[in-house]
Image 1 (tube, one colour):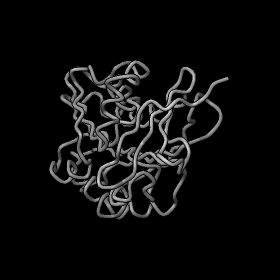
Image 2 (cartoon, helix red, strand yellow; image 1 turned 180 degrees about the vertical axis):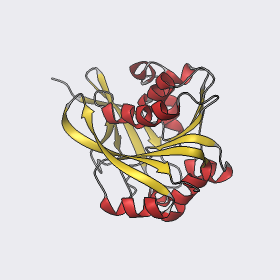
Image 3 (cartoon, one colour; image 1 turned 30 degrees about the horizontal axis):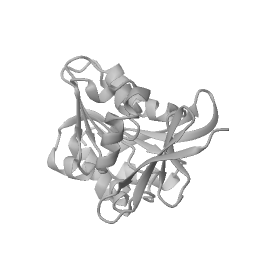
Image 4 (tube, one colour; image 1 turned 30 degrees about the vertical axis):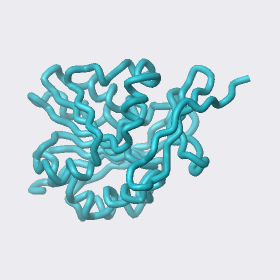
Length: 229
């Protein structure tokens, strides 16, 4: 019988608690310490993480020297998907707040996603994605956010800013013309659409299966800058 085996615990900066990495049979699972929120992610169900990068990167793949930003390394599947759909002259920057998550992707998690951190196009930073957004106006062709479960930060309350009007406006300013913002949610959020519009985006809500073509669905917002934004 499979059981959860705790491999490591990684503190979340600024007194945000901790993440725990478990081995579960042939898979790995990340949970919040103390069990709040159940599983945050696992290596068996990553269809929506793949789609978070695949949908926007296909739209901008032909651009020369395309540059994209991923907020949240997770288990590396979004990074791997972005690299799969971009050209050899692209740059994929990843901002990950928790140092331990980066180390896990260098170690036991790496092979599950195909070791995307070894790709020369990948640049993984131990940094708050909010700081990068505000520091690089018109810096990216696409931005993909998967830093929490949705607009109410589960893993870290500071994540709430990213989903606020100020945070979404910062995303708009960090995008190049015809840039695309993709945001992962565990569930749909109707109020989020209004904030996206106020921030200068035309948005489409896409439902994606977490694994294959059945089971739980997650929501990805695909947002394009309006003309003149």
